[in-house]
Length: 245
Image (tube, rainbow, N blue to C red; front, side, top):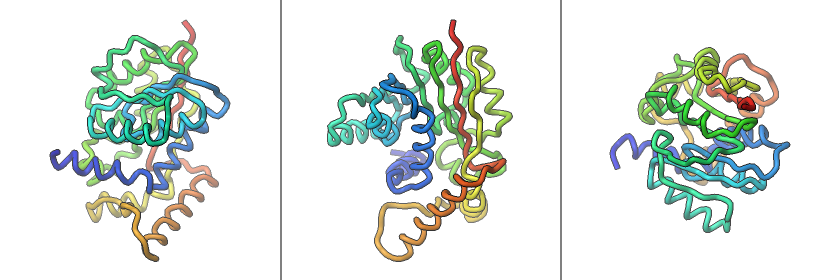
């Protein structure tokens, strides 16, 4: 495993202890709260945390990721949890050959990893059934691009303008929601990724006052973020509906 993959792998392993990742997954699940028994494609599923959350809510989830290590983790966890409606396969978006279409296609922090994001978005759009949904999250605000982005292999961060332009490149997609979140985390992102040039202060679960305080502070910031609408944030959420033929 090369240096870039090692950093990405470590970042993936801390998702269960990351309140920000949990908030993001809850936001996505809330977009589907009125839906029942959807067939969902989770493109770039990582180790499966979002897939498990959606499966617990009664949906059938098919997850793909190009990294064998991540799919191995997802399959092991799904088996341990006894989840029968979570299936995982090693595949990139570009090489995915499934002819099926899905009620909902989700790409969580995926498009920034793909140089040809317009062609990837076109592929995702084709995989959505007419009347179905496409849900995308991406890192936001180009001026925040720094150490963390480079180590994760990001090509870009997005603004509302650039993400809207990307989604609108597919004429059958209608944007229903386009919003920033994570406004309160902008100072943390600037400090660690741009100034200190080091990873964010979230790591494997440890004991002690310092670790508990970090998590408390982060949870408090995220609580504020959910209470007060803000014009910017460290991430963008887009929910689009595919028009009927």
